[in-house]
Length: 119
Image 1 (spheres, rainbow, N blue to C red):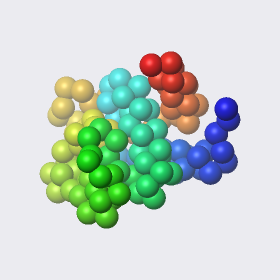
Image 2: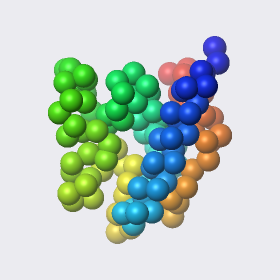
Image 3: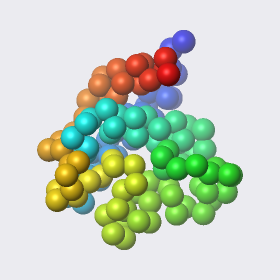
């Protein structure tokens, strides 16, 4: 099954958002870029399904209500207020898990997504 052009654009948009936000906030992606890829893919999936990039690393009883509430829409309130990213997408340089990257390739995100489909 191939992804739609819309899904492709959404994934690209979320990748671009993450890169720009990391640069703007002086944060970095995880030293394990597969973590970054999974989170970006999850944000894109929620953007497609729900209309907003709801944090993919939390459990919600009602995702639509959470989207309307906006607290966990990326960048979430804890990230905006305190640079605390539960997903480890945006990591401050002093964190032991911070990598050196603020960019990630679209091909790498897709590659990681394909490996996850078997699980």
